[in-house]
Length: 147
Image (cartoon, rainbow, N blue to C red; front, side):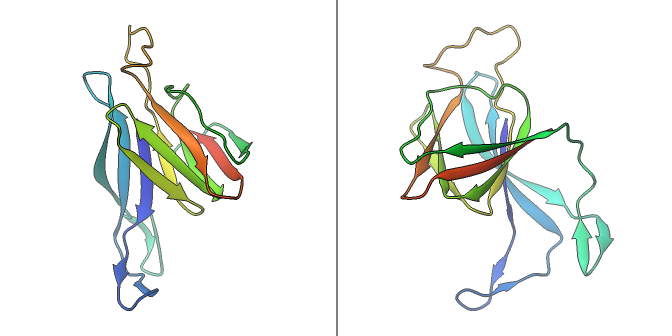
């Protein structure tokens, strides 16, 4: 399952946003019951903190890694080795699905990657997983935080 999470913002004027919010909207890239990756939207409550600093509940983590992907990088279809948050620190990352759809994430975007191989399945690159690639003229820099 891959969660792509962005702040829910209300546009007031071009380039300006209302910062008052009570949820994040999380775009989820998940492994469906047929083994194929798909997208869906979910809300994450900001139920802790104060009105000036609203927080989600604390989420577990187990270490982190940084990755630099050069201009032109593209992976083959793959599944995530373990659940992990992916934060785009620089550049643009495109994630593509078996159905031909894709989404682009840019510096400041993040998602939760748990597009895992279904239990008991043997990886089939024509059915399972997603691919990722760097877009644009600058390298892609990402931070992976194990969930």
